[in-house]
Figure 1 (cartoon, rainbow, N blue to C red):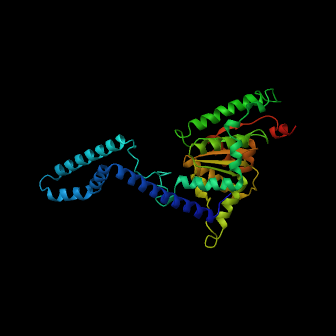
Figure 2: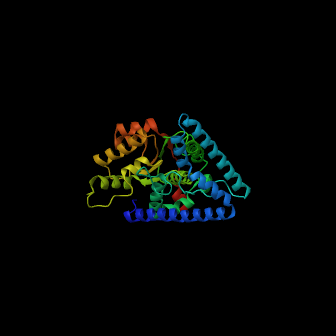
Length: 331
């Protein structure tokens, strides 16, 4: 679900407009304070000339330059304290005249040292979600809407737990994953089970929870990911516009949700690309959630022992059981 180059340009224009609007707002706040508190302007003018004064003092002080600089620093601290006291006394917060960035990391430019900021990466993902309709899906498929009563509380053949008991255990694992996401990076989940047992719904719940916390989340089907990686590998970069979602985006997002593994067209290239993607994220300690109808044995048969062993050793396995909930809703 890549977004177009035109949408990237549109987002960057919005960043530019945001900076211009904040610059004007800051100037208005500054003008308001200076008119009401002229002494603050006097202090700001003196602070602004501090660097020049410090250099002059250093050059003129002769034997003890550090002593002169110390006096200037003391004066600077006194000015800042007086300034803060004036602002607070007039009912203003001390940072009232500072620039207010929506993203302090990139200062609303979208880039940090020539690399896309996480806010820009997420905005690109959000636009793609909007185009695909997933944005509307997350409004109704989230933890607040999760209904455990939909899962049967009676045994199913060859299982020791009921579907509801099993889902309660899965929810505990997912809540642990979400609760320790920032402190324990690189955790991974594998959702495995038949169609209609709640895997995609719970993937959407995880996506919504982390998006709301400000993490970058990329949700993509295995079919779309393979198509994306193949297109990136073989497109004529001299003639084709750069994709907004590249392998770098896939590898660098905080959480990659890879849905419907096993439904993509598989060949040697696609299996290699998928392994590379999964392996690179493991090496970088970036979390991945894989959802599949395949069993663990099926994964080994379809993708090889190298792929399945990496999953087995690095992912928390959540096996979904029970009847097809979609069919149940239609009855």
